[in-house]
Amino acid sequence: MSDYLDPGLASRLRVAVVRLNRRLRAQRADASATLTQLSALSCLYKCGPLTPGELAAKEGVQPPSMTRVIAALEEAGYATRRPHPTDGRQAIVELSEAGRAYIAAEVTARERWLERRLAELDESEREVLRRAAEIIDRVAGS
Image (cartoon, rainbow, N blue to C red; front, side, top):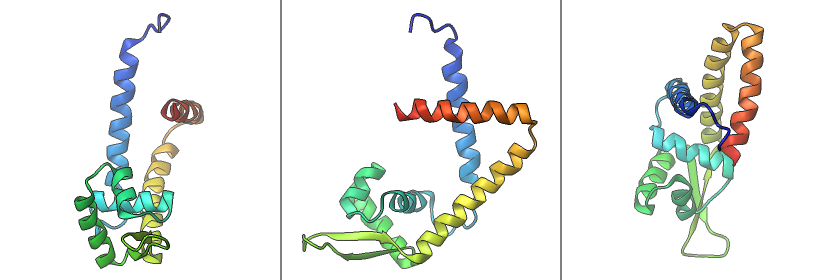
């Protein structure tokens, strides 16, 4: 840390990442699900089937809040619940085919927006972003 000579970089990078994330979240293919519901769907998409408690823990919310989110996702047809194979007190929540399609459409909408923005840059700027993406991924994985 003693060789670190650009204390403003952390702030600039944080603001840039927050702004980009905000813009990406605004690119919705279908706003029928709330951002909280979309986050839970995304978690199920990435992690696979989970118990409501596991999903709540991964999303950083209380189980009663997640119960309401799951109920809304079931009502919309984006998720299903089935009995837990070994614990009769538990259920397993998983994406339905409609839920998978919803997530795919959301990802596509965001990536198309970003692709249009990247097309506005010249090749040297895109190369800088290729390298930056690798570095940001490495930093985020630490």
